[in-house]
Length: 149
Image 1 (cartoon, helix red, strand yellow):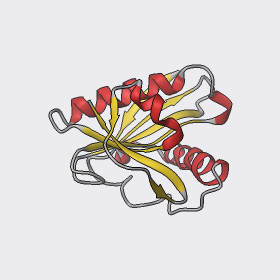
Image 2 (tube, helix red, strand yellow; image 1 turned 30 degrees about the vertical axis):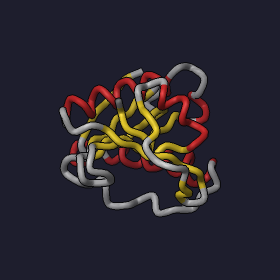
Image 3 (spheres, rainbow, N blue to C red; image 1 turned 90 degrees about the vertical axis):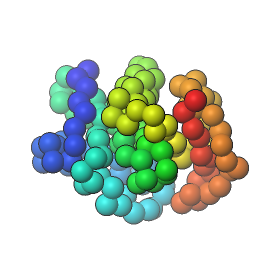
Image 4 (cartoon, rainbow, N blue to C red; image 1 turned 90 degrees about the horizontal axis):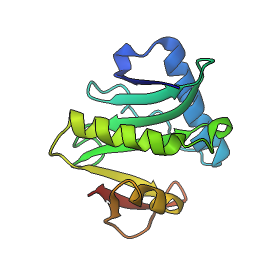
């Protein structure tokens, strides 16, 4: 695995195409959830794209790191995914460890808040996040807000 952390301007067109493709594959197609994937946050100057590529150069894990005040008062981590054909190898844990570390390095003292799909709450709790909201529906999927503690 090769890990990358890049701003939008530093992404190659190939990387951008791949990361958008894997995000649509997971969040729109796999989860059967039509929603506006291109929300304008990817291109913000402070947004960071964290991703892993396999030996063939295919993006297999991805997370988007957003600056404070973009989605929440705190920094946030979103669009967290592992491609279907790469699951079961521990990439999700590696991804979250790297995402939390990079977010804290980029925005120290700001805290991290996420909007977690409810079925993944225990996963995020294992990475230091605590629930700080009631369940709500986002695009028809149960979510909870969580803070990194």
